[in-house]
Image (cartoon, rainbow, N blue to C red; front, side, top):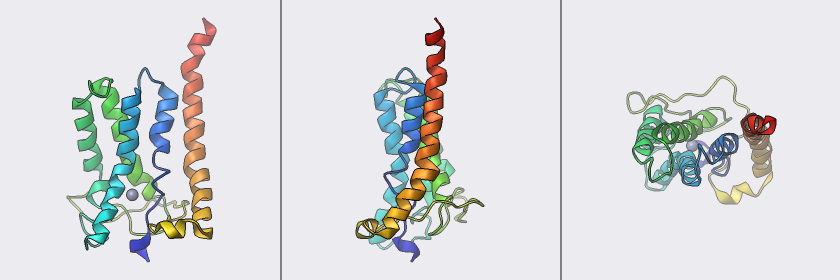
Length: 184
Ligand SMILES: [Zn+2]
């Protein structure tokens, strides 16, 4: 069953960079940096293409392997920091937004109810980890399965466990950021 699972769904990972964009605004998170953050949040799941190439799920290059590791997120964030001008940003903002966007992908996957765990320490260790609390319903890799009761359960759990907290945090950041202007 595990090779058919991918969690959360690819549409949900961008909730994190979008929340950062709402919270900090375009002064800190430019449109280009926001796009880079969205890309960084879904990039790890391109490893699922390896399944069709015969790479086993549990392999270092398998699903939730190296591309879901802390090192991968760090390298992507350092690359973004070097490209800060193209991202219309500062090195620190580019690093932080891309790091949080990419690293949150593995954390969200580790909150899910199925599949193998996440190889956070890859390539140094291929051990797979879950967090102790796993409230997010596993999402199907097969698009056909998404339009089913399973898909509805996934949407409900991702809405409650990912989109709602991200919307609240993003909204809170927005209000805090706007407050000084309101008092002038
Ligand atoms: Zn993933």
